[in-house]
Image 1 (cartoon, rainbow, N blue to C red):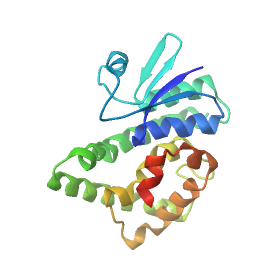
Image 2: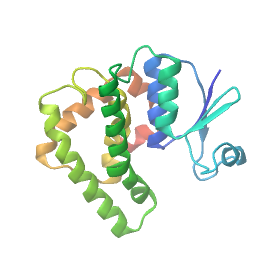
Image 3: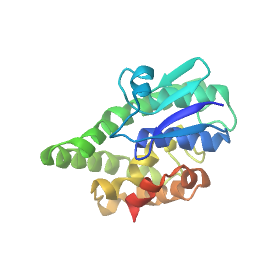
Length: 199
């Protein structure tokens, strides 16, 4: 069985947990205390970060790479488009999410007060820009749940925890978020610590 080293409050780890649950694939999850990481983690990942996937002799880190590997190993149900052009567009979206949204997470979790405030503003602006999309469609790529929804969902869940307050025009985005949160895979992916973020 594959082993996933997963942070109990890590949004990147949660992405991988969601993918395994969507695929119905059994995985041994080792919960990692992000403030007291096991020595083995630094050996497996030179960045000493989670998530890390161990599959026999193969060790993979970085959530998007792990999820693409799982997609290739377990193609059903598909989370990436089968069309090559749409698959390329999906990868571009993933890159943009990392660069424009998720780079701010480190500041929200470990930054100074001014860095946190700037990060909140960046996330607010970026999410406000994409909010109108969800007035017309159910998910990011249309009617089908995809890896893009998997990637974005952990950030949307953590908005109250990060003290990011969205304007009224983000109502379609918040309704979209609730659609994802109601999925069984999403509910089952949550750790106790993550559930507490929205209490």
